[in-house]
Image 1: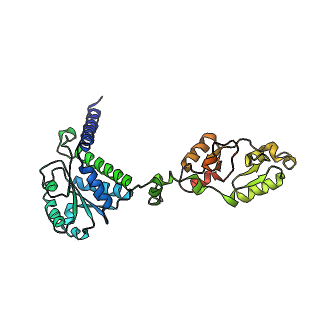
Image 2: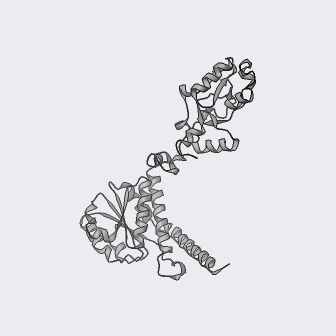
Length: 323
């Protein structure tokens, strides 16, 4: 192994050890739960503040909190000192990250928060720091070794970032924020589209091409052309559903109109529950090399005879960016 790879592995291992220390420290303190409670009850905005590298972390943490139903914004301590304090109100919560907790930029911010009764969650690695001394909730994180024994913040910023993720997830659980709600705030994101359910995009009601197997082949083709899904559902007397696809028609095109639907339709079509994700529907279609699935209600998916409540076509998924 060359020297570069050795340095890389050592860096990763050092940061893993920092996260292990973080995990252990959370189990020894009640301050984390207090921070979750305060953030969950914040009426307006969680203002995440940092200096230098911690400011970059504050932007990431604020973004994560906002996406998990805890409105937040990241601020540089320098910007707050030069007019940004006007953003704050007593309905906000300050979440401040600082390894030393002694950065001079924090002094005026903490005095302002105290003057206007703004709650402060201080996150630092120094128990006797100015930050923790003047914080409403004092979160003491462990002192960790920076990667390469350098002065550059590495393990500490990784730890702060992970702490922010843990805080965001805990708040979302406290607020009962579900994936379904997540979708509404991520209408164009790939994470949200992967959670779209079959029943949200399938063809249903009058858009389902369906016909009795006793009808003529001409009527079946007319129904298929009208609904434009490349197939028609054919129900038998016993309640079972077969499908007649455009592929079946091509394969039996010789004297087609003289043939009975039940003789050439495909038996045992592939089904999916209406509550399954559209992403799982695509996976099934890709694995079976087909472009449509019949949809039934979740309660009926295990039954031998199913009622069709919809059809999901590959194009339904692709049109929503699911692939």
